[in-house]
Image (tube, rainbow, N blue to C red; front, side, top):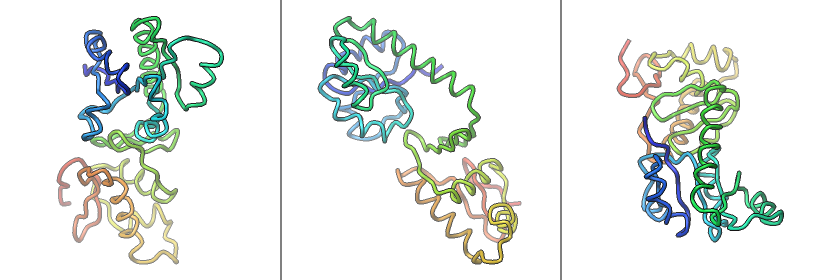
Length: 222
């Protein structure tokens, strides 16, 4: 089983890397992550008190992953600042690593329960949370229009199958007379641009003379 990846932001948080590793976590240092995306997508971010300004940027990168901010000492004012910063929860460095480890177990357990209860589709590192209509590619969130989401969902639900233009038009555009002849090509291009914006490899393939196929690898000709 892969160790849960925990992003450590700020010197005080990064100083806990060895303790977290000894406790079964895979620490990812923010100072190293800025040189390039880590091999493992962090499931939780642990933010030192002096790095609270980083939280909005972390939220865009990590999506729904929990973000824990160090308060140092607990108080009503400190908790209010924590919530105002955009963090999900806090940890008290003044109590030592045990408080952080307890909160990590709590949030990772909540994430696991959420994944089990919510229907998701996945192909390679592309995931679709159908309950929330959320799309993620690796560690980043992908914002789609309603039509783009419909088309992607149609392709993912039939991953590995070569789908004709006629079947796509009939299902997504309902054979609308006003649909331009190249509307599928246009929307496939939109999806590719968004799904590959981070340099990811192609998942939506054109099978000449037959249609399109979403798959992890080279599509098989029909």
